[in-house]
Image 1 (cartoon, rainbow, N blue to C red):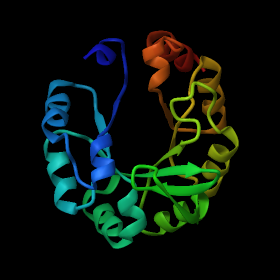
Image 2: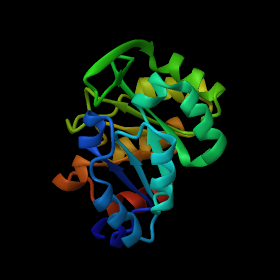
Image 3: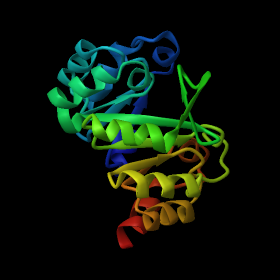
Image 4: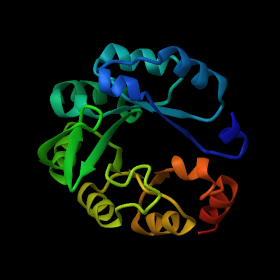
Length: 203
């Protein structure tokens, strides 16, 4: 409610317990949040079944983010895109350019760009890109890999991980990112949400 009152255009939710367990663990509170806000929400973490996606969307969440499932079950992604279209986002969690899954604990041998292109062929229309070595570090986003991904897929990409200043947001805007997910920097006060929104809207 606080972020909504300060003008947040969207709330990004992650069920971290679910990401590790492989199934949603906090659905009750997620439903409470989604139904209690008028701004749109998006949710990731442990979503591995079409029925779960349908339940989340029915609960009022606008977009569902798939990560591990996208790697392990591409057919589910294809069917999810067919049924739910723009409501599906694929999370690209990267460590040194390679895709990480299962709550970031397992690094695959697939590059982020290679995997993203395979997802586009299945009907995916939006991505969240996180450099997990920078997530929560208050350093800076991986501008190079974000730019490479945007150029490769030519679809909306939301940047995440290490976003700590207004300059970071401005740089991501220039690179063509559709948006940025800000987490720790909001709680530490490194980024003031109202100020950030005003600055970006002036660009």
